[in-house]
Length: 495
View 1 (tube, rainbow, N blue to C red):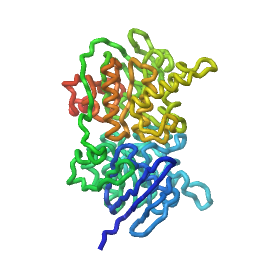
View 2: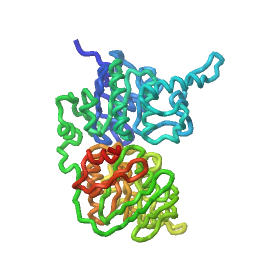
View 3: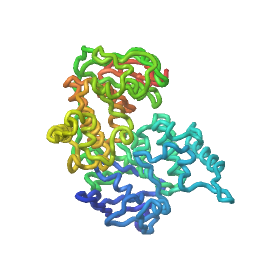
View 4: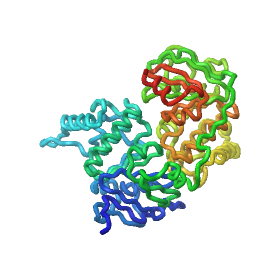
């Protein structure tokens, strides 16, 4: 007798104009199972779960839940079938509270017909307590950091009492403690028979949380493996279609000339931060979520007001200048929040890639289109952006290709210093390797890089030096030879 699956997707096809995104993909999910879905950005993972979640309607194929055929043509039908999706790009309403976001569109009502805010708040508090979150149900989403917002998304999805929950990169912005809490709650959910489809580019998480893994490549099903009997090297080879050698590309050079000097930088978020950056150096910034790393970078780039201290680029004082002046002086900042701060999703790649250098090809009312095309071609081809062409809307690209465009837009401004805040968050292994190669090439050409990252292997393999922050202050500095995961964590947690 054939095994009955909680969810079975058979021979799913999805086409868009000029793109066959899913080519007969199949996936089976057991009750109480964590089933990982792996593949490079652009492999079709997000398209597949959007078909499951009713965001896209399949062109061909079959869906069944608990052995019964179902048709899912919209989000309401998906939720009615017991499917909840936590998307990689958060969809919370920033100016509503945690409670209001969790119950948005399904508010509890009193007998009188009015919204029962007391009952909703109590239910939210209970859910937050179950996840071990010290958040107020009344907190505004806009006041929460990305990690906290991600946890609210997870609580919201669980609150629908779904039998199938899809988690798309759920740990990309979480601290180690928050990841532990998430994994504990996933185990509680699977103990109740809930099936989890888990999408992640963090291979280290699979052994801890997943039972089976399905690999996709170029819109096609490749294989399903038992995690316990499969190596990471085998999975990587399945994902990229080849063995991935030299994953971290880094040529370390002696750095002598100081390019950036930060002294006693202080504002409401950071306190007494001092460090130097050498020409052609990659300086890693490590620390737990909320340590003040991103806030330090925002202050350097003029986005947050500085109350005291100094930031000098080649001897030129930048404190008090606006971000536009700092960009012109030679500093670029690739932000952590790519969706909200890095791109205009509905606009073309070419628009996003040239936005910071408009003055190079717009003179008065005259537009030098040949110069514009020259800039776009240089970085579109040079960074190997995978897209039909430069006029493709950037929002339709995979996360890795969006990040390449964002990096290209800053490179077009010819920066002396490039700040990369979580440069590979939510990006597949192949794209990560390409971005590491780009960083290495920039450093070899004399561009100085500050890399903020929560991934310690990335910090250890790509950095010339490592600065660790805690509570808005620098708690330690390590050379490449001194830096280990243990030493970084000791500084991060004050041991």
